[in-house]
Image (cartoon, rainbow over all chains, first blue to last red; front, side, top):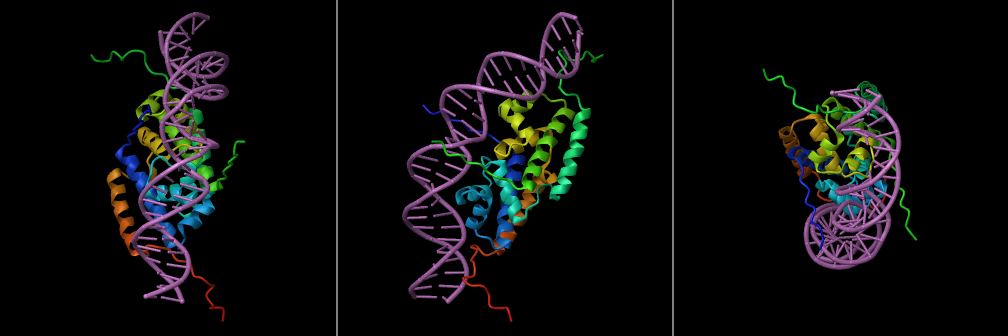
Length: 112
Length: 112
DNA sequence: ATATTATGACTCATGCATAGATCATATAAA
DNA sequence: TTTATATGATCTATGCATGAGTCATAATAT
């Protein structure tokens, strides 16, 4: 008996994924690239590209970002070198944050 | 005999995915949220959250975006309603583009 | 008009991502 | 210190995403 796993997503996530897919599709057509062409370059199947452009949440991050890069859709609108710089900045910030998050055992008795 | 499928990614894709993961991790800690806590809210396992924060390209788009939303990392830095508007704009642009991309059979003889 | 190609919508098989454990270690609170 | 919890790392089982087809239709070029 197959286990039915229905996942739910927030409106924001779905909107973001849908938008990304449509941006990719628009960019691909503007560049006059065939679905098969882009799929081949990304090393994925045409079927998967269809799902990415349609905004399917189950698609892999890597495949999606790769396609986006190929058709010229910039995530974070920045160049790779800029991303690298950002990564370093975040790493510095991370180093300052506590390595492990600890919850208070009880509610703070600050109610009077 | 197992088929070995080694996928490659562009530098840009990998950087973007890495940055996204680190942004999520930093945001989670700033909000003092436990890995288990975020995973539960997103409806995913703690192990998957680890891979997302580590920047694993094989993670699903939906899971990643959902986590990002929960910890407050905005993709496209815009609200959901703004995204909806953007989606409509892209749809209008898409309607104007040719429905099917057709490659020229021969190179255009415009070389003199 | 015809011919050609792109696209969309399916199917099926299987390799792998994922959930769900467990354990050891690190970290933070008391 | 001691105690409790968060994190990282690893393993196994299995549901499903993916690749690879096929087919019908749409869209473009000739």
